Picture (cartoon, rainbow, N blue to C red):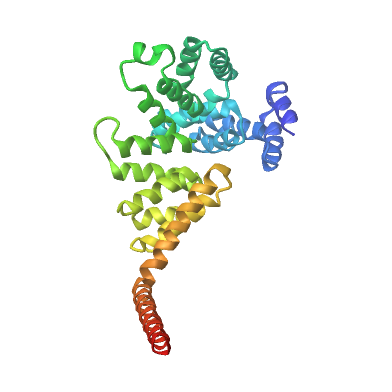
Length: 326
């Protein structure tokens, strides 16, 4: 259908015949047909219809969402410039431009060269290629760049970058469109330990919570540790984590977090989270029944003491009888 429409539009120059083919193909969700209809509306080429950038944008957005590159460029440009019925939206323009850039195979080549440099021990090459890819906003490159900065192979990071590149790239990869949970955990650690000289517990809780929402056991364990240390997790954060327990129920929250950590499916988290869960359950049992346990212990000691006295008395009485007999 789209091919017939294109033929009548570009070869026969008969737009009125081309349009029904485009509309039939668009009804079947053909991205090329949506792009062509958007082009016609945008440039006032639709018969008996003036320039309609809003209608054209609607079709271009539909085609772009289906992966049409030219429509994606048009959508990015329209968001950046706006039109008579739509204000500029630089953020959405950036997202679409970024999406288009990521479809470029050259970016994959840069990533591959960075990876080859890492495996070959060529830290300079890995450093250069990953920093190039990281500056485009690609989360995997930002995470790898943060790792290179943290390890500081051959002193490259400390020699050529004046700013704190570990903090910068872990932070960028933790807040992007597809954030890395490992980066969010790293940022939580940075805020908790105050690596730049200022501890920020609420920020640490926020970062750990984001990673915990992705079922990262380390983040769940760290959050539970903060709760044990007396940090209050607000109800909205618990709701995001799907923990339907009042924020004041510290034991209930800890049990839930350690259970989820233990059952996350990671072998390395089963033992530490399982032991922490047993400890919390034991302490909870002790705290609930400590009065009874103390009373039972006192009664037990008293009973042992009385039995001991009776045994001694019985023993002395038997001895006296033996002496009299002799």
